[in-house]
Length: 89
Image (tube, rainbow, N blue to C red; front, side, top):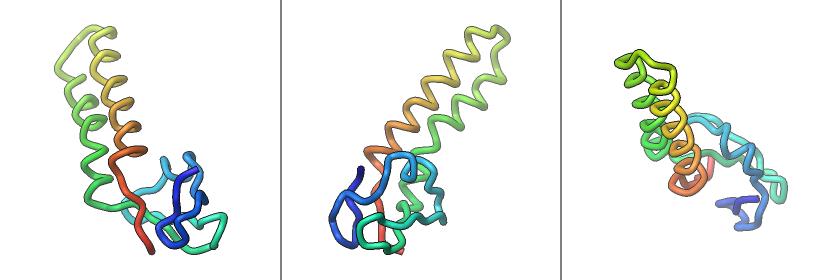
């Protein structure tokens, strides 16, 4: 669980946090108020996955596709959970 920016209590689940988009919201399970993700940081966190996806068009082998796409997705998920801050909505 992640801390809510309103009540500072652990009320945001990891799954809810992963599916927050630039304009998406989720409700805190403790206080019930709306919480979102910082739009600037969430777009920055998506960059590794998008870069890996488009870079995979430049290679022919399946292994190269996997080696470009999977690390980008993993890095994006790590950034979503650590770098992207939750904000009040």
